[in-house]
Length: 514
Image 1 (cartoon, one colour):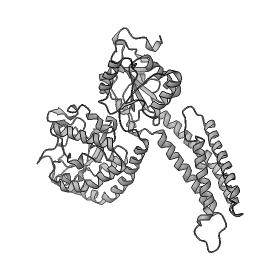
Image 2 (image 1 turned 180 degrees about the horizontal axis):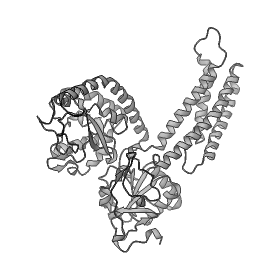
Image 3 (image 1 turned 90 degrees about the vertical axis):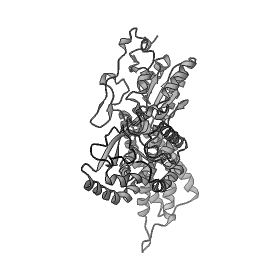
Image 4 (image 1 turned 45 degrees about the horizontal axis):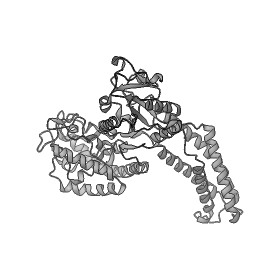
């Protein structure tokens, strides 16, 4: 039996998590250094800040294409032109455009954007060189039948030579960037293991060998028989500890490694961890070859997904671009109005212009949400245990104008641009928010599922009548149901439709309690 699976005889040998602290960079450091384990980065990165390999490949491809285009413009512009000079004719730039497309395709065909964890710089540059060799062969065959003008050929060859000199340098920079981001955890997905089994030991061993994913901890209900560590990874507690653990906002996937033959236990574990917004997957050991493939799939996409957030990286990238482009435009348009509101708040009542409140974000991460202060100083407690009611005496005179139209939430555009929120998504609820005398999160079993995507300034619930406080259990259930419906249907067209419906909704719903 492997040493990692020799169960401790005494339950007192199982360590308990140390309280968390916050690093100077602002990241939460949940455990002391002796409980890091062999794969923990120096500081944990929230799941929303983690970069997907597919997204980085797209970014590097676009950067290479921009470099090829810039070199082509320089080379094309250096060609002799008739007097008086005129804009570059399409025909003269056509060879450079065709060449850029072929080089870009050849680099992709040579897998120059894979950036595997086991690939050294020399091997990566060899892939880039192979891509250029393929591009050169294709261009020779292509231009053999389409002779370039004698004045254009030297410039085209100069373009190809300059590209061959510059792009390998860029790929050295890309490779070093990827290596640094992997070392700091920005490109390495984090997961926790449920079940201190032989499957878990083999999975941790494979993760240690490949470094394609980081195992942050192991959880098992059978703590009296579980080891303190599993191949160096700390045992952090039972499943109840997992559900409320501070490390979970940094975890991308929960991997259940209990053998499938234990059907009852597997179903019970799935039911207990599915209350979390994290993706839940089931691991099936298929030997060394299958183990490596499984680990790669865990690093890149869910394996046997049971529950969790949408995993379409293209959709996530498109949504982020939507937030940046529309959010920046909205901030520029709203800036004069925001300046007027800030002055009105300053002269209306004593206190700061802005109010920051700790709310739940993506993956249950706690974020600070910005708002214009609309309540009297000292009455808008950050915990927001007490929700706003009709004719609430805490609301200021300016607040009574701002809140019906949600103008107090305009500063959340800064949260959107920072990547903590989206323009469209479930509205962020305050940490510890209560409905009556009960925590709102306790009224719906799958309440945390609304945190499977970033919270939004507006959302499907808001434009369907669920706006303002959720002061009854039925209101909470309806809000969560609408939020989960949006998560399942989310698309660019739906987001645009919700944004278009938001302003008429605010104008026509001025009597809503806010």
